[in-house]
Image (cartoon, rainbow, N blue to C red; front, top):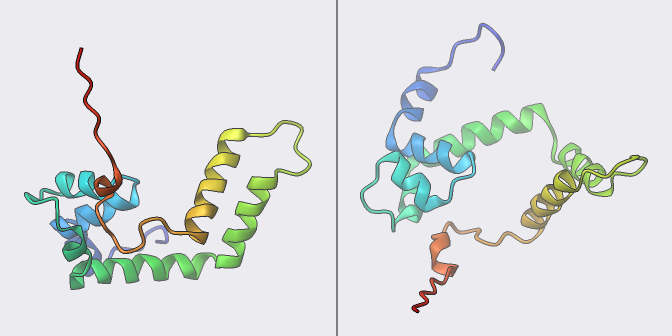
Length: 129
């Protein structure tokens, strides 16, 4: 958004709903379960239903479209490749390189593309003395 430009009523209203809070929390890197809790949902087992709502889809469309207007996929891919290779650098930034590799891997092979709960793939081990 350009300086001095106001947010549309759509953006203001929708971002302050539970769906909007969930959307923003996921975009900031929280797991879907954490995002649902922070947005105020009582039942954290139905993230797929949240993501199928018209409001969530509208937010994805709005924010996805605005990003595409500013940068192309090819430019993003080029930046990732440059960050992964880090050619000509005197010192390799391993943290940035590893993060770029994770992003590229997720783009190539999405691990959880249909919005299932991430806790489904986790195992809890309890050890007793």
